[in-house]
Image: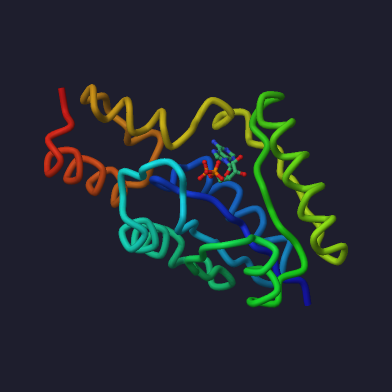
Length: 164
Ligand code: ADP
């Protein structure tokens, strides 16, 4: 039984992330979305808010679980009994960093594999930061995120007075 961890910041989760989750859920018995706690970057959404949004928009996929984590990814994988790390590859620009991470994690735990899913072409330009920026300029982000996330993004920007 193969369990995969799909780690990330998901600030917020987009259709690009969801596409990877959906496809990974068809390949692995179980997919644990690992939501990063200790980021160097200052996230727009708190950890609890990010977890809540991911839970809401993945509730229809039975073999997906959402768990937050801090510290080393290899330790988290051990803790939840995962054999594989899933990452999405959007463009060549993602490659160098992802390769370095995959090789480092392999050094730390030779039993842990990293598997990359090639982004669907329609989402290859999409990132959480693009969504946040577009929303700040009041652009329609409904084509990039689910309706629930769309609402939360606008609520948050209003609350933080971040709209222009
Ligand atoms: P991180 O802070 O680790 O980069 P992200 O939340 O930005 O976390 O991304 C998590 C994972 O999702 C990464 O593997 C990233 O490449 C992938 N990803 C991000 N956006 C997309 C997208 N539009 N399509 C496919 N994969 C994506």
